[in-house]
Amino acid sequence: MTELQTYITSYFGITNENLDAIASLFDATTVSKGDYFNKSGHYCKKLSFVKNGYFRVFGYASNDKEITQWIASKGYFLTDVYSFYFQQPARWNIQALCDCELYTIRLEDYQQLSSIVPNWPTMEKQFMAKCFTMLEDRVFSHLSQNAEERYNALFEHNKELFNQVSLHYIASMLGMSPETLSRIRKRKN
Image 1 (cartoon, rainbow, N blue to C red):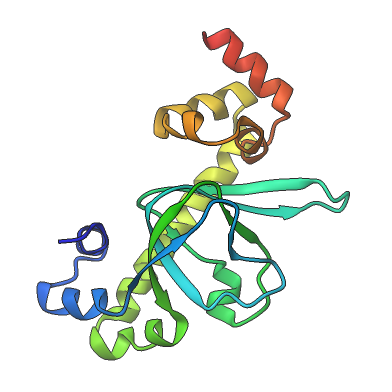
Image 2 (cartoon, one colour; image 1 turned 180 degrees about the horizontal axis):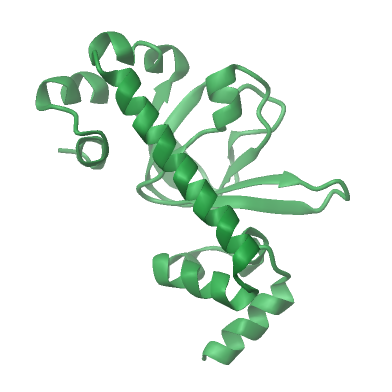
């Protein structure tokens, strides 16, 4: 069983009969370091499961400052949700931070899932609700925690990120300056 099949089984509770049909819609793909999975303004017509590697999801503030919205790593799904679900131009740039391996499903194949798995709409709704809950938790942490508490929470949840990704990107994702992140890290050592 591939990582994708294991994740689909644990996350969605898909039966083995449907699992093979769903997994067959995904293709093994790669994205080289520095290449884009998708760029803002373009249509994102794919959804991928990250087998390994790191992707930076980022945009630009009104002052043209880059803001890292998220760093996706192994075990996460990757797409520009707005573009993928609503067929609108993407709002985010998604760039590989290293050579990455993915399992990718094209939009037209994704749209066929409800004919393969009769209860797919219910499972998809649960998946989206879990994603929304994660987003709510992240927004709440940004509003209720200070910079050091946000750092600690991310470090506890994803330690390897700090050895694999530029600290500048991590600082941006945590809503702090690189200098603040550096001071926090110095106090921790």
